[in-house]
Length: 362
Image (cartoon, rainbow, N blue to C red; front, side, top):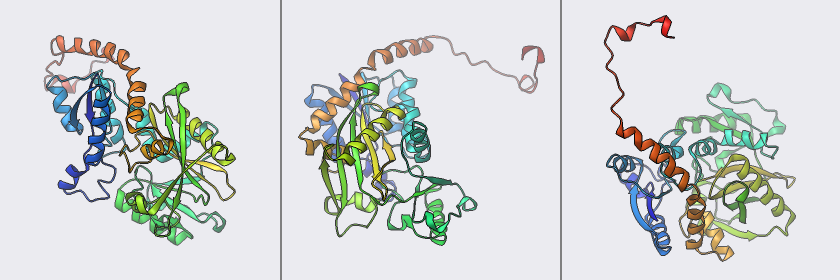
């Protein structure tokens, strides 16, 4: 297949003046190189496209692909991960991973949690804080609480300060995050138990659990949180332990993850993050329908390595899952291309007529 590769290259954004944390979700050159190599190893012809603005120019020039392998995180807005999928749908081009609706839903942690809870699955209680006036006044028994931006990934905005023990700390951390990220803040019950990330492959009823890593912090890590700092330097700060469903807790974690994956409508491959409360009950934390794919640094490829699954096999599974949508995308593309064959349907509007309304035509 002729496969286009869309991505946000971290070095490009750093060169444009973004901070390390601001560019934290974007991909390193090693990821892009590894993806290209894995796709080529399966006989595909790979065309590096780049970020969304480069994609727009290529589409305007009339270029098309059988499939786009999309790992663009997007730069701005609550729908940033949905932008490339939506654009490709407008041109009738199939792509990897979830559709625009699911991408937008999962980026908003509060909305994703609401959907999961509606499906009858466990998730921590909490509040969405849009302004300081909305910071709750929970009784002391509700503390500690956990505070994080509602629509960030890669642990951005998460540190030891995210765990707050009283109303004053809650107010200050909400203030800090509201000012820094300019988006609502999610306040949740702090889950003090074991933390896991579950890898999944496939779509709908064909999806399945690949396996599970337990996340354990080392002595030098920021304690109690899988923070941006701990993720950025995970090679020395985090232990990733392959765990099996023979452990009843792991079995419950994997069932919760699969149920959440299907309830949210995620596709092809990704991760569900789960943490247990103080009593050991697994709770949904968040969904990652656009999981990182660095071959040695990202959780999903690390899980595959622990399972003896090659990086090339993981990428091939993703492509095979997405390729099922190529025929329908081709039908849509042919219908859309007929629009380009028609005359421009924009009609000039006079200054007077734009201000008038004929009630008989309503």
